[in-house]
Amino acid sequence: MGRSEKERGGEITEVTKRIPVTGAAINEKCAVMENRMRSFIKKLNGSGFRATQKEKRSKDPVCGMRVSGDLFKADDQGKSYFFCSAHCRDRFVANPGNYAN
Image 1 (cartoon, rainbow, N blue to C red):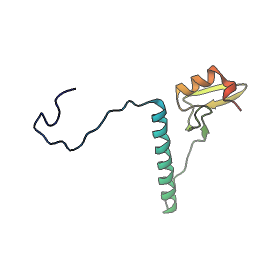
Image 2: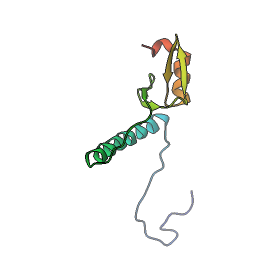
Image 3: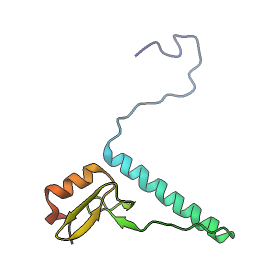
């Protein structure tokens, strides 16, 4: 992994550990950022600015995440479903009965 900071003659100020990131962790981070953005928009609206959403948002039936746009879309029994990722769409397509209302 290379020489430590001490071996290179420097001072150790912070130690970080690299942790592998999973799809669930990414979805969680996206949800947190989405909530922060909504909070920010509410603050803007309260101070006289007007921020509007132009697109209708849908709920991903697999993970529950709110999505906009139709990049990942599947149809089942005449109804369209929208997804946050290809992974969620593929899970839905494999067994729509588990997720469709």
